[in-house]
Length: 311
Picture 1 (cartoon, rainbow, N blue to C red):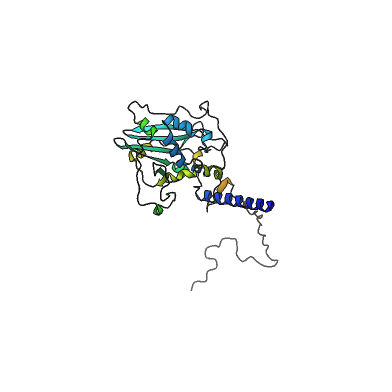
Picture 2: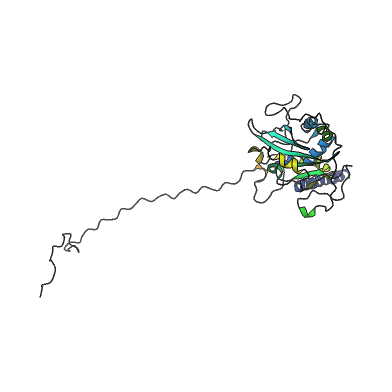
């Protein structure tokens, strides 16, 4: 009896694990951005006091948010934050140094003031890591699940009514709009990291995804930029590298047609050897038959020779 219960429990656990893995793969972008959940990043920014504290929380191993390895050295990349400002607009750039001379933007938090004590915020994933128009914004400031989830990639499935959340009371937002605010620029970069930070090994995306998926209830994906000044300003500062264009090998995603999934090498077509050239056969020299005269006389014909008599 105990053995049968144990077997049933094993089957239930394996079935639950397979089901969870299936739905996790359905949410996958198949891009490096899978390893930094922007819903979780936006939630972490909401709880941070200022940009410096936000950068520190973003790179803490215990927060289990940063799982990026863009330069494929099997070590987590340090994400540093740079604030670019213009009038009442801020663009907090999340950037990674992939080599000593190259950097890759991961995402940008765009903030724009719309009035007295009124501001909007969106986080936009870099196209190389998340695809085109990957925009996430808060959907309910009370952190209650919305009536309809907006996690689909199909714009036709989005809700028709949208409530724009005022984020001016978020601690980090109020901090950057203080009169005495000094624009934050991270002092860290390639081979220059804070003493408290030590890189760790990335984990498989199937294990990473369930930790941050619940935060998708509190934020939504949209296709409209709410902070146009910050968005247009950011594009003059965007950084991209060759390393950031490739998908991380530690991801576990569903196969897609026409793509090389999972970092497996493509089958190389066999190289056809050129046909060996045959030796050139020299034509045989024709010898005249004995007793026969050559058809043509090799001597030039003399004038008047062979002409008939004049009448």
